[in-house]
View: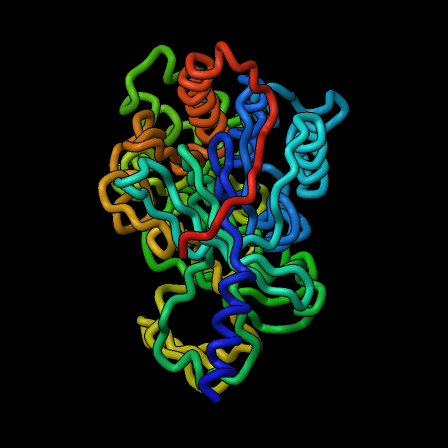
Length: 422
């Protein structure tokens, strides 16, 4: 038996590989990781992109509903160095955005290493290098790999994993319970009573989609929320806000946006949607809470097709009791309770990132840490914020790379198999 264990250990040792990456390792092949890779390519810096799923932009491809469109005009969502095709609509669909990302990766020759799940990443003080341990899965094969690199770019983003709240009695509910990341369309909920927990952009849009498939949604609104029209007088609300902020102080822009929202949408508080005391743009900048851009849900709330309800007290078999004592019969529950960063689970570092998985320094200073550590996609400013960080990161690494390789003329990535040290 002892000899068997020795043999297993021997085989496990040789199944591990140590790979030197002659450039940065980018963890994550979503829009943030792709943008950084493209900018590094433009700087002539080699790189390796590690992705735990089998495709790029897995959040968009696997964890979004069918009706999803970009909430902002395409010019605010395009990645560096390559605009959207001219024939794309102002608000591209999910399918169009994925097509854009795939063409982006092809254009800049970005070939991520798929099915590489990062277990840990730590900085080795002795060698001055980063050690990134992954579990690589290909079919039934499983191998552990350690990537050694000088620079590490964390591009797993703000929405790496879904938040599943603990609610009393939910386990005894008996009906279907799913997170919004698994929701595709309201087709299978036709004629059913559905509770949507959460009133952000996802909660509102899922509720609207359920209505369009003749379901009966009730939407839980526990706290205050800013609802703004997606467009004001034919112009994007976001674009208008950006324009105003270039001339006026933030507090005044907030006031103007709320006045315009009231003129377009009316008083939302009478429908159970109480506004926060802090203005929508100030709230976004300080707390990261995005205002809801209405694309039709408010009309359904006014008509009563979407029932707005207060917080949940507890679930029971086929029912939910609300904090106001009301009891609703239900068939299904959809948790539109958001996402969070997964960085604390794998990055062994405590100076740059905080416990919530976001850089400690606020935008625009949260892109660079110490010892070659970078972060992209954590600005709470969407794709435009990620693009801004990607450009800075590539320029910063590119400057050092060019200075050190002036005499050697290295232009492509060089991955070398080396002896495992673990």
